[in-house]
Image (cartoon, rainbow, N blue to C red; front, side):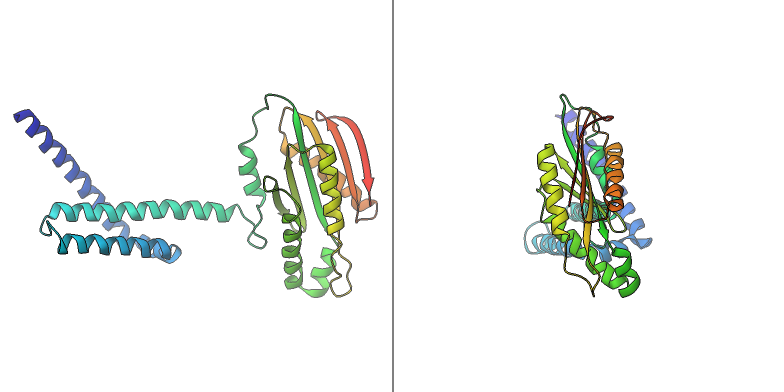
Length: 269
């Protein structure tokens, strides 16, 4: 019995020390202005924490043990843990925002690298990887003649068009400027060709102040066990530039077995 009492007392003493350290840390964070920055960026989390805090205080004062300072120590720990969880959510939100293009809401290059980083291990068996790259024809003319606002509006329209043409499992990326890419998982060459053609035809948007808008498209389907996405995107970029060289508003498509061996080529307008 004595050993049990000593053990419980030791546990209570350790918890009390832990609470004291947590509260000191919280006071340091408050004194450094950390909480004010957090509150500005995460108002909804702070409101929820304040409500829970108020409910807990009411239970302590209106109910039992309102003079038990151990409960108030728990209350401070509860608030601190709430702020820590909020900080973790804030960090995740900031990471998500840094992976998105601020203008279109699509993934950017950084977000694409992180998304594809989870799929770099060789597959157990060969499968199709299809990549489509898109360039907005005459975008520079829109920007130069009508200003960046018109260019930004056009880019948002393009992102909406692309998002409406692919599956939920596919990835749409703004790779920079007026260039976009679509990563199709487990998409056969026939499916990739149909999606690329659909994108190219949907790119014939209404003229912007007399400037014709269209899409030049490069597409590649690779039968492989090694998901070398960067290399496959370079293949698609080469095809995209070929489409522009041939007169724009068209698709240049290739099917590769492995990485090097060319199996088929198609050009469509």
